[in-house]
Length: 421
Image (cartoon, rainbow, N blue to C red; front, side, top):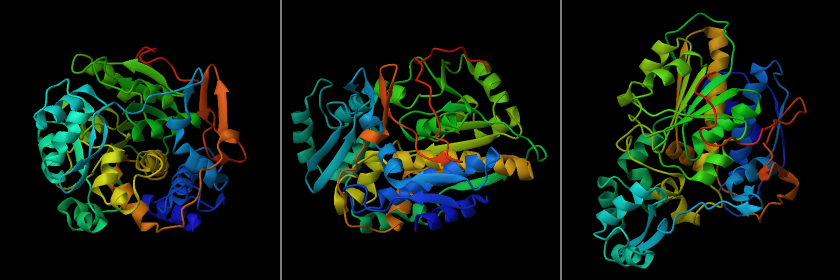
């Protein structure tokens, strides 16, 4: 089955992936959703596309257990033997008047927006948030928090999501799109990547490309909120610089002029307003491959803030089987974004032009649902997949090309590098 899924991804992107060797089988995770299949397919397709780019067409392999464990990479990451904190105190699920609702409060401004929407003081404790949620319906909380600039999602069933206007919009579109834009003639090669992303899908995409030799520059602003442990966990193999916009716009433009790929992971429209929309980028660098990752994708919720755990709540996954045992939507979307970037580079080499890919966590949730169900498995073995270097313990990157494993150099400090190629 996994091989067929990989070939379908190749057809969707318009590239020939060749045979991809897949080892392992479901179940590999304690969930009825086919997380192993999704992991092996996303990693396998991305690996096969990079193999084609590097002259090793048809020599890609992926192990399902390894790919699935990589979907939990942040849970296994250690700094000096210590795990990284993943959730802020107020983030999580709460009982409400008609079910459950999830509030995402990992960033201070999202936390404050949720507290304001609930009529609470900014120093309110989790118990007070629970009491306030208990007096309202999930939809009331979702809408109030969203209006205030925060992030929340009421728990919906799969049927409810299928009937929702945005659920219908997601179901009516492909898993991802890859469209040709005007650009130079065929023949161009190169794999320089500007990474304008954070938490978790976009950084996973560029980390994967870095593990296969791409020159990746992660760009962040000095005042942009981050989850520090997650920044480190997804930074392996990259360089890291700080550019504040709009003051540093010309510095970023110069990076784009030297790039082959730009991956954007901020809320749709945020970078466009600063002069870095798709049309702006391809004018700066004809032949560029632009990859956009968002929470919900095109439709009524296009600009809505969202994260993996919220999309699981909104789309019916949690209602059916509880939260997934990993951030599968983030990680799958990340590897699929890496695949879309590599596919765009392959098609640029073959057809010329510039290329624009769009992906979303909600579309990935719809894809995962469509892969069917499996009897839940147990916890996968992980010890043989871990490596420790320079005080960092991490899951080795999955996938092989011609029997060779990808490699990561240790993560840099945020802002360690100058913003130049």
